[in-house]
Length: 284
Image 1 (tube, rainbow, N blue to C red):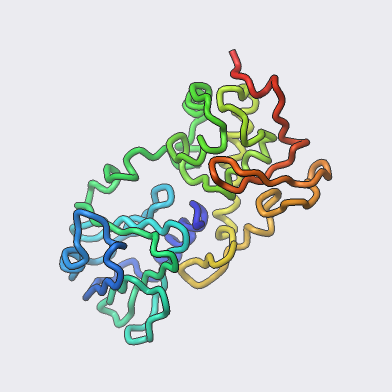
Image 2: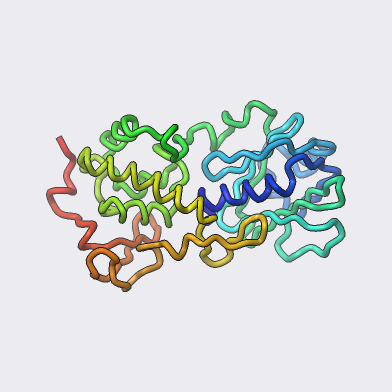
């Protein structure tokens, strides 16, 4: 957390709140948030007087486009932004404050301090480390079935960790992988190259559908997630397997199971998402 739908919701909220705002000063209270080659002092100096013209998203990265720089921000587990009037007391776990010329602050908070920010020259943001190797966005215009099928068919790894890599398609974190695999009736431990063409088509459709619906719902609220406007997402009411351990499957009534796959808690229905000797072998 947060995953693509949550980050997209943050992007929309921040666009409404700070697009067009100019940075007057920056305070960095946790230097490790700022990644090399920038020191926190250089980060501050380069942002003075910069105007936030647009906020984009690539995968789970936020990209603030300014006059000379693009600021790339990854929220990791629990990072979030808030906008407050300048002078409002800082909340606990506030690590970076962008003072705006209109009397407001854009503040970055992160309980675990895992989030990261860096600057790259404007126009080079899509070649930046972490972004350059990302797969297509999970929308029909960019996420095409044929290259997805080729990529899936060439890999013998289990399907869940493969989808988590962000190289074949971006945006699938633990929650939405479980949901997409359940919708497509594919066991999370199935070798990718054991999937049939019909299963790959169903999975492709499920990935687009699950992430699209989650974006529309403003994301999923698990634990502390809130968007940039302080609102919780509502997609958790539509989750069918994630966090449903022991509850009856909506399709067959069998209890939802939870196992570890790639060190991640993984939810599935053993009746609807079978793993047999036949479907655990590569297709030829």
